Length: 94
Image (cartoon, rainbow, N blue to C red; front, top):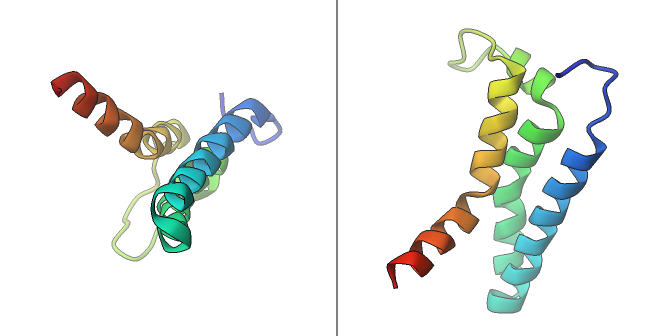
């Protein structure tokens, strides 16, 4: 699934759209500082989604073995969608 030459344009587009939505909601709800915090939150998950091979191959700074690219990709999506899951749980509980 993760060949270097395989384009993942749809995944990159959707993840960027989710990140932009987070930033827009952050700016709308709490101003520029809140939008900047949301942007900072999205950086690592976007990196995991866009470049899972490169981040999975990283070894150093307490990382002793490489990670499978699919795991890096899936965890990037999980982290990126955590706010959506949290809002869904809050909505279900009320």
